[in-house]
Image: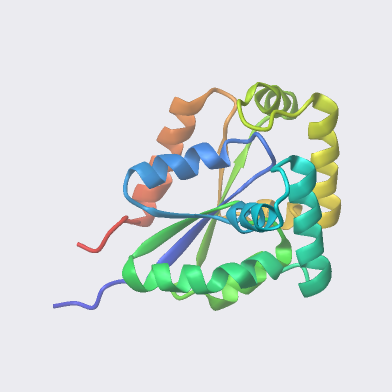
Length: 193
């Protein structure tokens, strides 16, 4: 009997409205464990008794990073991710933001880290953000969020260093087919065989 391959983590990165969460939900539906970094922020917003808005999420994100550095959310996520990797061959992460988070996870997670960037034309992303049912954004709000995520959250680094880049200008079907091809090529699987 051969030793199983080491556990591996796949991080989905991209700007708001690019399709990261669609990809994460697709892989979760296939049985992959999915961890959403934003869930740490959302939980803290609710713990404080605040309404969940882009502004309250921004306040918590920035406070975490001001207090604990740019890798603060990844550090909070590490115990959950390590536990998931002990039970599963692969995991999916949605919403890795900062370069510091990338470096921490790439150096720390067993089996390494694969980064898949999901990209789309800016006007298309803004139209998607305006049409989404939960927390829609106007074009100006989307622009401000883009700038804030690039300037304050180091978001460009993980997108630039991605191992794979998927273009999402044509809709869900072509995007998810490209994602499935990457997952197949990497030999990722949701559960122990």
